[in-house]
Length: 326
Ligand SMILES: Nc1ncnc2c1ncn2[C@@H]1O[C@H](COP(=O)(O)OP(=O)(O)O)[C@@H](O)[C@H]1O
Ligand SMILES: [Mg+2]
Image 1 (cartoon, rainbow, N blue to C red):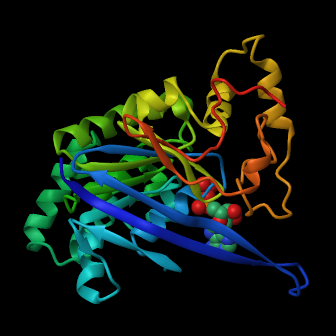
Image 2 (image 1 turned 120 degrees about the vertical axis):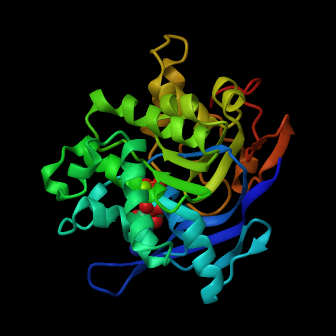
């Protein structure tokens, strides 16, 4: 199994200025994050809003600059020279949550989809047009020769997201980063869109980073999962193992939040939900400790991600299977 992408110690902090411009808070959006993506694999990045999922995707595509850390594509480091940037941008495409973030409402569908081909000067005008029609059929937007003339506002939300998918596919990328690709769609059409993505991922063996906070679709689509909490990976491993047998209290809380209420677990769930993150010293020690029902004294130190067994990695001092709540 060969690795197509690898990030090492990726770090990005943001500074949030106070309303009077005097005080400032540092937000550790991505903090020492390392992982690999195998050829043809679907890796899920999950975690609640603000955990740093989108920042990781933007750092990989170099649409924002990291503070430190390295990115490797096909074992070659992607530095900031022009050639390298072109390489990653030709081979990795993003699908964003809001179609209007990636498509220009004043452009016709045909031009939107052929834009990546034009940016990278791929093929002749004729071959680009052929590719646009072909990819529209792939995403099941037909009749393709009529759809190309339309403007985004003439389409439904689901059709617009198919245009975004077609745009991402047009240049035949090896990697797709899909950032909550269906969360803005009507619930009734989400499954259909996910199935289409999954079908195309398999058909072309595209390596996928699927960003979501929806663990049910994650399990359906992904092979491996990384759980993010405040800019760090707290648990990572084969998706079935992690979701059936979580070893981090935060993973457990995410799963509890979507599970049927179980009287035995109610107390545990409530405790995790109510404890608010205390912003003071939040980056010292384990970041989850102020919300954790199992917190121990040693959680004042920072737990490192460790391989527990079968490639399930967890950053936690507590053995939650035998631990008692406190
Ligand atoms: N451009 C930015 N400027 C300041 N803070 C940002 C910026 N982008 C993201 N953040 C902050 O970084 C953290 C992670 O954000 P993000 O990666 O968007 O999380 P997610 O995608 O998991 O919701 C959040 O606290 C967010 O407010
Ligand atoms: Mg996001």
